[in-house]
Image 1 (cartoon, one colour):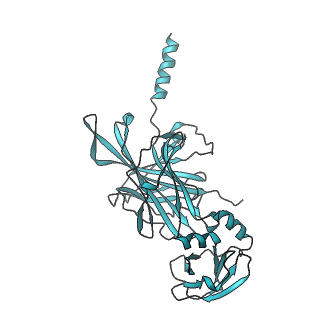
Image 2 (cartoon, rainbow over the protein chains, first blue to last red; image 1 turned 180 degrees about the vertical axis):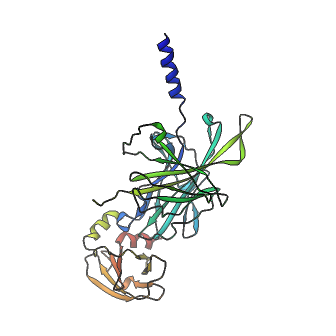
Image 3 (cartoon, one colour; image 1 turned 90 degrees about the horizontal axis):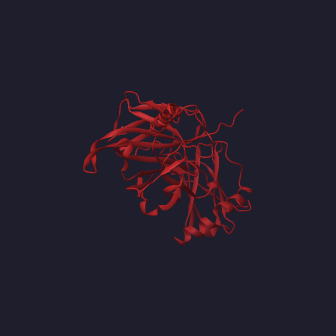
Length: 256
Length: 110
């Protein structure tokens, strides 16, 4: 009987392990579209735990747009409902009419997370370059919160460092925390400890963070801060976690 | 369709430029192909040879590049039924853009 209770207690502890990181996701089929690839890019939008490939409900976003050559276009009505990681998500095929960098950005509806007693809003973006032209790779969109790339956010080899500056309302956020997670799609990555599913780095005093991934693939960076406002839930005011999320693809090194 | 056409074109397209610093793009409407060439720093290519070949690699025409890095190829001056390959060569940099028959058909309708 004692053994039973001990086992139950351990199981309870396991279940009470820290919740895995949530990520808004915008994943293109290719972050560098050449003319040989065609004239469009296919995007998949979701809200998930990307390492575990565990999808969550992504309600119709508040906003979804593309910015190219300083022009932002609303694409919200172009999204196609789809099942992503066994849950609600969206897809979009977008025609790339000209060379340059296209920045796709999504503002989701506030997601109520009872386990954290808070709402989550992840301002999510990714950069796609078309036809060999990388102009605009460092574009700042002016989102509520945003990671502005200091490293070109495509065309990176695995193990390259990625640097970005975390901004909130246009200002750098000193010592902000950035959660980093791998999109484990078909990669079969495992961890020796659950602590390694989500890695964490902090920005410096200027809001700049640095990370070098151990492998190729899609890596998500989420800079998390608490909003200066609350949202109502069941009659109470609840905190809002604002995430600045950027997805960056690292390429497999081809040398020997 | 475009991807299939491009695969066919690649069999006759020039070898990919070893210099990646020059970007070549061409848009098309019912009247002409507009060629744009610039360097990766955004500067327009001001001196270059532009060769226009058909989809079977036969030279159709050559056109001068303007100081703003653009050139115009009237569609009625070339046989574009099999598409066009636009080559831009500065002597030290070269690159190309493929205009498929689908590109022409699509943009002519809009």
